[in-house]
Length: 247
Ligand code: ADP
Ligand code: MG
Image 1 (cartoon, rainbow, N blue to C red):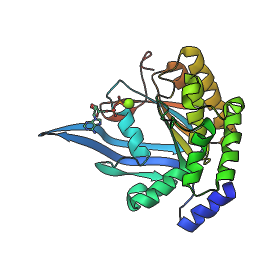
Image 2 (cartoon, rainbow, N blue to C red):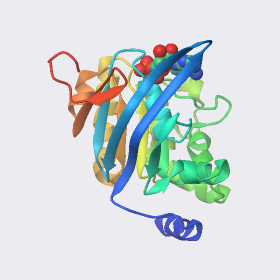
Image 3 (spheres, protein in one colour):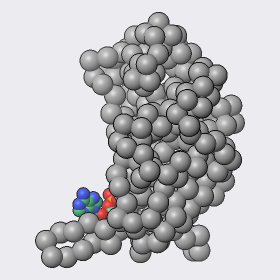
């Protein structure tokens, strides 16, 4: 598959480099009537290949807003975001969506799996969107579900899975196109400590096996501490956490 993706990148004229994801002078404000809410102010960030970054911060500090900008799901008020050297705002919506599909994965607090489809079908969907054949997508999905320890649950629908299993399916889906980076918004926030800990171990294993970079927004200090780097989002800016207990 990587050959296919490399060919796809060449055809699209995308650049490939060691910095996976970066943003420069990123601002985001929302207007509410006559008031302006400044959520992100002048954020600079660089994420390297294979790097694991945790972003922490209080509720409402702008963590989800930042992830949405970094994932090209929402537009910044000013500043730019680059994925593998490609500036999102230089692309039209269609090209942006294809780059995102090939190079980024997303995992949310609530799994967002499609309820009427099996685990295998849910995981296969990004490959089908990328234009791969059904039989190939189903095989890759089975392989990825095996990697996250769900070989015995391929035909189960989300309602027939436990919370931890659903999050594993969501992680398998986020990785199916072998993205350069996975953006995770509180992926263990809805799980008990033991299940969160197995998901955390799984993320570390996948990071090593697939060399995927991760940005993980988390309140879970155990998860944050296993990352390479922790940054605190506060007053619209990303900082190094200074005091204990901020994680
Ligand atoms: P976090 O994920 O850290 O809890 P969010 O990124 O969801 O925070 O939100 C940051 C701030 O931006 C909050 O004050 C929220 O109310 C505000 N906000 C988020 N989305 C919108 C929107 N679409 N319109 C107006 N305000 C928003
Ligand atoms: Mg949030």
